[in-house]
Image 1 (cartoon, rainbow, N blue to C red):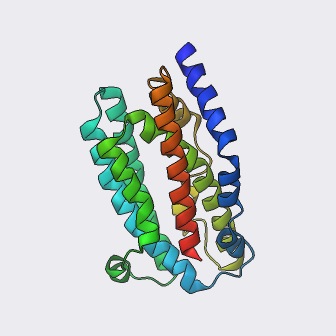
Image 2 (tube, rainbow, N blue to C red):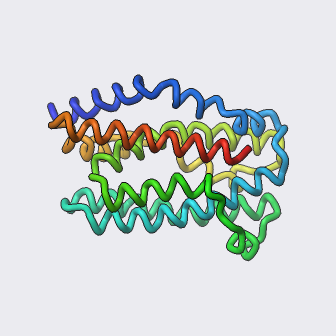
Length: 220
């Protein structure tokens, strides 16, 4: 239990340290524009297209995490995330269709550098980082990403005539389950034993949030 408590305390420290950055993401004008019904359909389509490329990159990153993880229980966790990404991709096609994007059009769309930067950074973590760096960057980012997705989902249903079925992609990230928190905290707990590892996790978390903000800026 001491290890888990240490990890949870470390996560609280990360949230406090990066609160200004988290606030910039959570108050991003793109999200606000969807909530108010002022975002153009073209921007919404661009959002979906870029998510298509990000999710496909995340698939490959998760496969790398599994390949490079030394512990079976950590591999099992990342395998579970792959299952989730599979469902997310299916739901993304539903959202695309609701916005008037056909399957072939979505697959033919091109990625933007500002969108790929996020998933490309996690590829770097897969090849050069530790499971602790990956886990801490994932969970702190998921918190702001999931909340923004939830707000966009409400805006789409209120102002753009999308249904709950259409927005399943966005609704699948929030709220984060306690089971997910427990598993990812256990991974982080393996790396809170030395200042060196904790520093690496802090840097990974900061960069993950920096790239997350870059994504939202790209949406504008």
